[in-house]
Length: 440
Image (cartoon, rainbow, N blue to C red; front, side, top):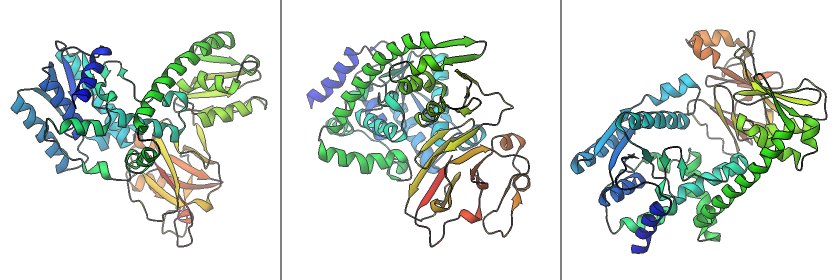
């Protein structure tokens, strides 16, 4: 047990994460992980303050978490900052998932607290088990080598001192200095991707390799080093085959194709602009084709010219279209982040901003685009079609939200008016064998 505590002490010192005189801000939810971190730093006499976010997502449970953290800090005379957020409103207004909205709200507020109170670092309770989960999620989403780096030890002023310990190791240590904490009921809900990985996938890997989480942690370090090595040589190639023209990046196609592993090089050149591996593959396959084809990320467009790829920002007046293959699980567009799943269970998921349709009836690739004047859809339960403009009026959708409303198209049919209406022709029936779920 002493070895585990020493492991954490040594990790903080060896990596020069923070010292005892430095004013630090601990992100505390009230759950086991963050309360472990708070107790550890409090008992070791660090100069700590606490920040707690109430995202108002779990009703009285959220308020009880806030009260618990405040009571603990008052009892120990620890400075505590608390902020309530209307997370759902922020997510809907900015076209974000609830999880991404909470993340943005949280870290923006943390930065503000630090700036106003002379705090140098933000400390979070991410640990080795979180890192393994993140790496597996990134593998499933196809984020490339960058995603295999896992959770970084440092991100700007954010520091993660518990990455050297697994969840089980934390529980072992806590037996020798017990503390109160709150149980988050959502942690056991399988509707969340991370929970599925934690509860069902990782246990199977641990059966194969009892040190699986340690292995993933060391792999992350190797991938980080490999990525840095590769990036060095990509920069050398980049200087030879790219040029800049006002607000555009020009990539010479002949130079790219003569590079070693040109598709890999292309991915590294464009991934920082939001292009995922699937779109990169489509771009690479278009290099020998005719000019004029365009490809979109959430922020940028790439145009295929005669001997150049032209990369620039998307302008407000443009209407990008995104192609979705049956194999894609994730897409980021201008206003939304999309998650796609395929499974056999026909239980209807009634979560907001989620649609479930009959997979067999779809024609891939699907197209995601902004709704257009004249668009029609056959709403659930209706015999005929209805103009999307009329639906938006009936549902009292604001002009701002109308600009952020997209449609999913299969062939010539609009299958889903995002977050609002499913096409009756694609609904799940008794004969449905496979379900395609879309969520934003």
